[in-house]
Length: 80
Image 1 (tube, rainbow, N blue to C red):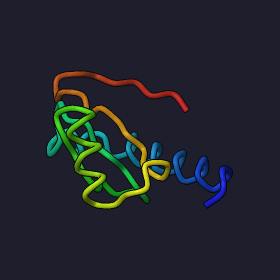
Image 2 (cartoon, rainbow, N blue to C red):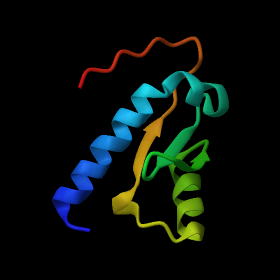
Image 3 (cartoon, rainbow, N blue to C red):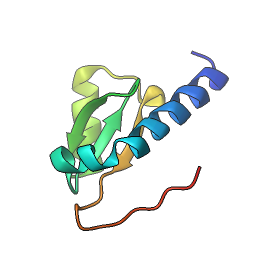
Image 4 (spheres, helix red, strand yellow):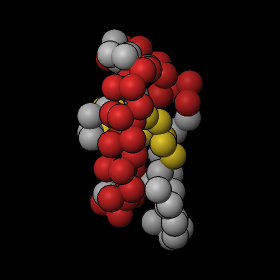
């Protein structure tokens, strides 16, 4: 996958994350999630744990968007 395709996919994954933040908070509150192709492919409490899980999945890190999921009480304002 070339750089332009990676940027486009990352942008689409970020838009998906923002659009679904409320439901994502329900399942992944205060976790770090790995997103690929508009799906959460892994989650963890910290980055080393997440990278370990992604390695076991043989995921290509350059194709993964990593985001911290805020608590349910936090209000997050995203601007695209």
